[in-house]
Image (cartoon, rainbow, N blue to C red; front, top):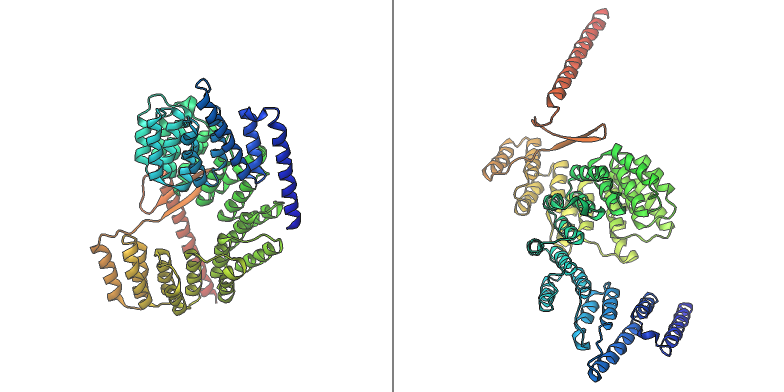
Length: 538
């Protein structure tokens, strides 16, 4: 602690010396040089000193303006913009400094507004963003492309995509940043189809890696992996080099779809393009292999990674849990602690899930209890959900229900759904009925909940109650949701649904299945004849 303080004092002394060298030589009037000096102050942790410099410069130039009308303090706005950009990690401070610009006798320019709107995005404050929009109109900068793009990003991020699109449509000449802002705005709002629609209307020469990545990420986030992979393939055909973010998005899509062959191709692509050193991509590859059923390959890749961060360890623990390897996941957590890597809340969700799949009730309870006491991580509703699922799966239904009542959160659909599933495993129709009544309020159109309770009654021979649940389902207009099946053939993922005839190769698939069925039938008859001969021979 003392050593750290001593180093900070030495650095402050060097800052003073550098500033003292600049002032006598008039170098502090060089806006670009002073901007670099402010960056240095911030990077070394002396933001207060940087503030004092800007205040002095502004005061000096404001006085100069009052004495001589020929002098205009235009250079000072550059310093304010620099300071606002440096303060973005603390957005409220950035906005406060922006509000001081008029008091220094200055006017915001086309750079000031995008910087302060970035701060608004971090705060997600739509009213504040609307106020700054009014200021852009008052200063006549509301039609400047940089400002319009920043306003589109702000409105989209604050959940007002309609206003963003209205601004976008009001501009006749659009540059690439404005197109990308609108595409990304729809993608972040979860409207991937509209994002692609804007993208398709974008001039080909203006599409860059950001444009493609926004659409890919939008589909990946909406759990539409097939479309995400399709756009990535188009990106490759257009000879656009993907960046780290694009590769992360498409790897996520591969993991969700289980598209192993395409994932392996991506792994080779990442190695050939020199991206192997990026820890984010290594983590994504581990996740992809684990979710695609190749847990051994995921482990091999995990061991190769030299510098593992908390995401690396957590991803591997989650992968082991997904494969039902609860004890191995716990051993991995112990290795993580030995490596002095501090777990986060996601790590504990992974370890609790691992305990749930392995039926390790006592171990899971111990980890749940040490979260706050040992690591200072307060359990969230997701952790309570994991613990309730653990107790329910193991047959401790009363304890699970008691934990629901004691937790400091209102139980959501995931928790009641977990209890409904547990009641089916252990044949507790009363708990199932109670869980369903609450689920109907939270998820009135989820057919799976009704089906679960109906099956519970049927398993106990309570056919009248089972039929009543089905009748309620019909009367309320709840339709059974169809389940999709996915298969990967020759690097292409195909999806199927029961009774669906829309696939282009439906006739061929049907003929092959019929041939297989006939062969199985013949094999079955042969087996029966063989068994008969053996019996006759005895």
